[in-house]
Amino acid sequence: MSQTSYTKSDQTKSVANLTLPPSLWAATATPAPETPMLAGEGRADVAIIGGGFTGLSAALHLATANEGGTDVAVLEAAEPGWGASGRNGGQVIPGLKEDPRQILSRFGEKDGEAMVRASGAAADLVFDLIKRFEIDCDGQQTGWIQAAHMPHMLGDLQKRHGDWAARDANVAWLEADELSRRMGDDRYHGGWIDKRGGGLQPLSYARGLARAAIENGARIYGASPVTDLSRDGQNWRVTTAHGALRADKVIIATNGYTDGLWPGLAQTVVPVFSVQVATAPLGENMRGRILGGGEVLSDTHRVLWYFRQDAHGRLIMGGGGSAYESGAVNIYDGLRQRIHNLLPDAGEIDFEFAWNGKVALTTDHYPHLHELAPGLWAGLGFNGRGVAMATMMGKILADKALGTSQPEFDFPNMKPRPLPLHFLRGLAVTATRTYYNFRDALDDK
Ligand SMILES: Cc1cc2nc3c(=O)[nH]c(=O)nc-3n(C[C@H](O)[C@H](O)[C@H](O)COP(=O)(O)OP(=O)(O)OC[C@H]3O[C@@H](n4cnc5c(N)ncnc54)[C@H](O)[C@@H]3O)c2cc1C
Image 1 (cartoon, helix red, strand yellow):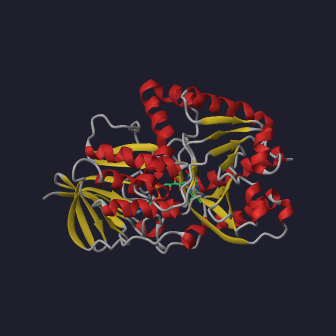
Image 2: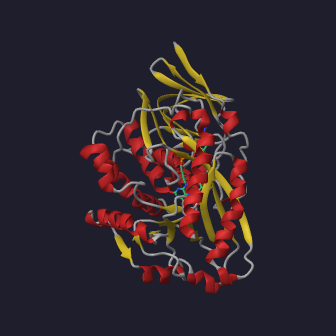
């Protein structure tokens, strides 16, 4: 049988350390399901590369599709949730960065409407999966707040709120005094709450998706980095160090950890190390004060600022990123200082965890779905907002692999566009962050 090898992956570079790094989520997650290493030759109808929310949601939707499901195998370099999916802020945020009306004007009626529908329903999908498969992950659909840090940001937020309200989404405008009541101070000028959103323990959610997929017949192989993806006659051949799978269809779900497996794919996104810190559980009086209703919040700083409490009253904060892991480590102190600013009367606060992981940014700020070749798809570029959208992308990719003629949700197929001068991305990220930090500092004065 003819076999054309498209490329060799330099996988070892991007996922060199396969141990789950220490984080709040790693310390408090439900146990990981058994995911043996792929050994020997095998086959699957659909092979999925990457075991984060995108790959696991695709696997679960494939395994539960139709009578008897589809024969699906996930190949994960480390373990389910090892990437950004097990390390994020756990904020479940519906929608995309731009508003419905901007999406429609940019992508047109048909594609734009599909994107608005899919992204608007993405958070509901997460909470439905949690309920349907009884995933133990502290999931709470208690709302996502977007708050204006400057009065001039209110107009944009009002438009966003209005756009979603016009679509009957479960949203509400929050005047400054209502926001102060939820925040315990008056730092914000107003905002809106999208009640479709909420919070969860992301590693437990990833492991829950994996467990549900396995219980429904999917195979998940851990410690199985794919080193080569090639065409093998009518099939695809997906090779790891100790085995290989022949598959009719393949989904690449590697987001910020994408590298050379498919030519040019890694160059369509800019990987950035994003950062989180978590305090020790706050005292009872503090817990009730800041987002005590379980809401999660992001504000309008250019270098995004977002925080929430976990199920044990720890304050978790994220914001900022770096092209280099060493740079991410430098951001921890700034975030700790921000928590002190949020809780000025809390005295000495103990910090228990600081960690980071890679997100994938796109220059248009949209996630991208690509049909790279017949029977080969990729979904990536969630721009740091993939808890809901990567889960939805997995469902959409599952429908692509199934050839569903009228899928419940859809997303346009986009031509992969490798970024020119991609090798200069580190400089670009650093320059942009420095500029945004400067503008934010001027605002905060
Ligand atoms: C610190 C941080 C905070 C964040 N906060 C939020 C938040 O609060 N809300 C939100 O919506 N989003 C947030 N995000 C973004 C969100 O986590 C991601 O968008 C989402 O998890 C992407 O999921 P994924 O499955 O596409 O990718 P990932 O979860 O990154 O999974 C990719 C997987 O592919 C595997 N892989 C890579 N190459 C190979 C290979 N060759 N063979 C086999 N496996 C391979 C990797 O091991 C990895 O497990 C945050 C991200 C970070 C890092």
